Image (tube, rainbow, N blue to C red):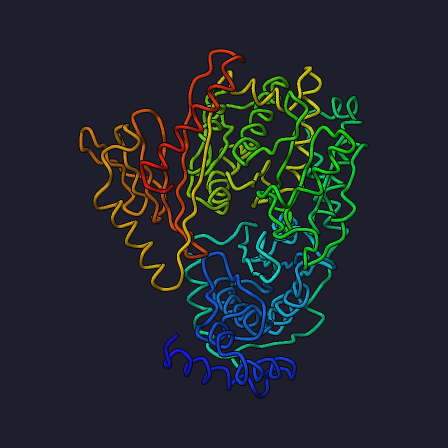
Length: 580
């Protein structure tokens, strides 16, 4: 920590010792100045960056923290952009909601006040609601933008601010960069208009809930089957988040009457007292849910993250042991159910399509092919799935889509991942499986027997500070400029360089254009069919390696051995790249 950095932080912090900063903020800043140099530097050495997804950071006083002042500055920048983009409208409007995190309601009300002070009408949820509710509300109220206050599955110290556009999707180019530019112009709290007139702020709640839930119910493909198997034993946990407001009701409307809610986790609480991290991707976050599921011998466990846009599930294998399904497995299962059931009902259309991200299992694409349904591959981030839906609106029919990080969407009335509808449809898939004499696990095994077993893995390498970012950049340059010719003794056949937007055929040395936005991602396709994807994280100093392998399965007796073979192949790839 250099003296220059410390002095810069001190100079900035002293500006927070007077109005317009509130007395409590001033008190905390003075304590840092007098007693905690490290926290002072962490809080004030830079501005909390407004990225393509908005803000995300630790809560507390300071320019590098989530607080009412940094939220206000971000909102003022967004206001300025909206006022330019929609100057032709008599009234610009936005929708806002928030999750169960500490200060989420305060930050949402702060943002509402800034929008109103800029003459923008606000539809603010009357209580916490899931992120997909916000996406739906933007469309329901014909808004030009939306904001949800959430840090998704991050630890309790964090909060965040996600911006949405008029289609109900998170902002994409060029709006994302343009909004960032406007936010950067707001260099002082005095630039922000706070506390706008209350008459421009309308509280929204049960009216939106009802229409949203009716739309979700309309997605059901098997209401009669659900009615027959209404007693399917479901355990649900909201992990102290927003899912409790709508998921149980969605399950009930689908006809499921035997839903056990994990009582210790059904009260929204930003301290997340029963988990280390409220992330349904982690087994530890599902521990209480699994305990309840074992106790009642449930058929399926559903768990949503704090803002209820992602869902994790657990099912029983043939040994009656509960196992966690990963995001790729759940996504493939959901897409298979949708296409198979629509085929049974003669609902599939020639213009149907599904969408997945480039790091999500190829099994979804193979399932689509078998039903004659086109599959789009997009960059990582659900906003790109929403962008494909928007680009093809009125021409193609979106059935469903998903990404490996536990996010899924069915139907197009929401334009972000939606754990509320996903919970209902996953339960329905379990009900349908029972109607054909299968468990969810057996249905998944049947899918592997039909299409081959697909398995994925991931390695995250974290780096610290500016030096860490430079190391990550150097790693990407090394892979780009001197790519490996073989990985795990298998030739590299193709390299997809998404930053250069070209595919390199390593055999013929020909180049082909990639029709996706530029992104710092590399993908290596091996002769044995393995796929390795490398990309830096967009939100933290990490570089991520994704591995995808597959193998045909001749019979049910070969499933276990094939699973071991693929695990070994992934480990061998990691060793080949010196990641373990």
